[in-house]
Structures are given as C-alpha cells and as structure tokens.
Image (tube, rainbow, N blue to C red; front, side, top):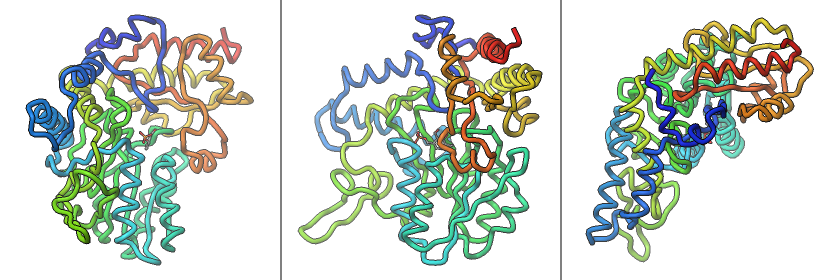
Length: 401
Ligand SMILES: Cc1ncc(COP(=O)(O)O)c(C=O)c1O
C-alpha cells in the first residue's frame, strides 16, 4: 500500500493524530483542496447559462466531473445526478419516484442494518401512503438473513432499499443476490453505497441496480456533494424533485416541459465546486490507491485491533468478526460498564478520534440490545501505529497496562 500520508497536511502538522472516524467522513488530500481553490480562484462562473469564455470553461469542468464519477461506477454520464449527499439522494427517490409509483398496500423491504437515512424516508412514506415496511433480519453474526429475505419477497414488494455495506458492523452484503431476487419479483432496488463506494469498485451496469447513492465526503471529497445514480430505464418514472432554474426545456405561463436527466433533477445553480472537488478526489484515488491493496491494508488494521481487543475480557466486538479480520474496514465494540461516550472522551485526550453513540442506526442498536458502541473505522492513510495506539489505550482504560 502506497504511503499517501504526506498528501494530508493535517498529518504533517499533527503526526501523532490518530483519526479513526473515516466511516463518518474522511480527511481530504491537498490535491482536492487545490482543485477547489483553483476553481474558486480562476473558474467561478455559472454553468449551463453564460456564453462567455469563463462560463463555458466552468460548464466544461463541471460536466467533466460528472463524466469522471460516471466512469468510476461504470455508468452513462446522464445517469449521474449530483445531490448534496447520500441522504438527499435517498430522499429524492422517496419523494420523486416512490411517492408516485407505490400505492396503498405495496411493500418496501429494507434491512435491520440500515442507517437512519435509509429508514426514515421509507418510514414516513409508508405512513403517508399506507405502504407496508418490512425489515430483513440479521443473524447473530450480524449478517443479513438471506433465507428470511427470500421469504419476505413477493409480487407486493415494489422496492428493496438496502445498504451495500454496514456502517456499524461492517457486515458485507451479497448485493448481487439482493438485486437478482428483488428483480425476479418485479421490485426496484436502491443500494445505499455510502460505505461501499469508498472501499471497493462498483459497476452499476453489471449489477443492474436501479438506484445507487453515495457521498463525496466519505471518500476524500468535499462535503456537500453526493451522487444519485438512476438507471436510464427508470428516469422517466422519476418526477422533478425541486423545480427552478436550469431544469426546464420550455416554460410558458401555464405549462412546463422538463429537460432530460440529469438536468431535470438539478434545479438552481448546482453544486459546481463540490462536484469538481469530488472528481479530483476520484482522480486522486485512481492514481494513488489500488483497491485490492486498500482492502488488504484495512483488513490488516482490523485484524491487529480485533486480535488485541479479543484478549480483553471486558470488550465485546460486534458483528461478523472473522469476516472483519479478513476484509473489514471498521471495528465496533462495547466495553462492559463503560459508556461509549466516556470511552471516546478518554481516547480523545490521547489524540485518538473514534465515533461513539448509535452511529445513526438506532434500530440496529435496539436489536443488539445496546444503546451505544465505539467504532474505529480505517482508511488508506491509517497506519499500523494508529491501530496499535488505539489498542494500547483501550488496554490501559481496561486496567491492563
Ligand atoms: C450506510 C450509510 N448510509 C447513509 C449515510 C448518510 O450519509 P450522508 O450523511 O453523507 O448523507 C451514512 C453516513 O454515515 C452511511 O454510513
């Protein structure tokens, strides 16, 4: 794994800082910050509006960013819609597709592993439209129960909205199975790839998924930029989410004709700088990160941490531990008689940043009969020393050294 740490000025300024909250958001390399600064300094102009040189350049850079993201997930360029994050992408599908295409008595399937962003839009829609919301249960190992999934499927199911990788337990999902079985029943599939996209290559056309969503800030890009992939065949079924400038082909006093996707879904001045920054992050990853090596590296860090934590009686590691030892990107645990916030607070005093709480997954925590947990999540710039340092202070906290 190439050492990329020097591209992150934070780590040059604070070499001992141990940032382990990557599943929430990642640090940004200077190449991404430079791309943002370069855009704002030299190319700041409206896109798809002006006919002067600077505006045409801005349009070109913005649309090239879309092409970079499209190529990254093997989509066609017009299948990529820029939103502000994963959450907005899911809300867009709930309120501009599902609301028009699902009817009383129809069913939506999600899973017990979901982040609140992939629960709340469906819960509210189900209440509004008298739909039935069902959950794929998890096994005691924290994996999806695929037998139960098969039993939940029927012709009444119109949508399966599922995470592609758990943000709490790191549970891998057999997304091919989820999609094939849903399609066999005539249901559409939305994949929440917020956790998967930063760690693995995705090919939307091979997957044949209908909707796929992820966020730039979890993969070295800026905040305020997310992606909504809508399969071309589905685009006609999705109504405009918001209306305003740039998304109508023609407008008269009493009628409007929408432009085609993606513009139909990008009303108003779009997220120009953020999209450009995100494309810079993708290019940075393509030039510096081999995904197979990244997975190996993250798994090594998980293994180091898990093997150490497993020796501490008071620690209980959540999720599919054996899987995490071989291909994980995060480790979540609880310490007997210690609140997760207290653990995180103690670690913070030693310059270690971990996430503590329910990680926006309260139903999952309820299922696990805990109210909070501590999560250490790794990325390309983390080192063995990071994992060792975390382990050392957990041991110390548990009275072992
Ligand atoms: C699996 C999953 N889905 C959705 C989200 C929401 O992402 P965002 O806050 O970027 O909208 C997250 C963020 O942690 C996540 O991990």
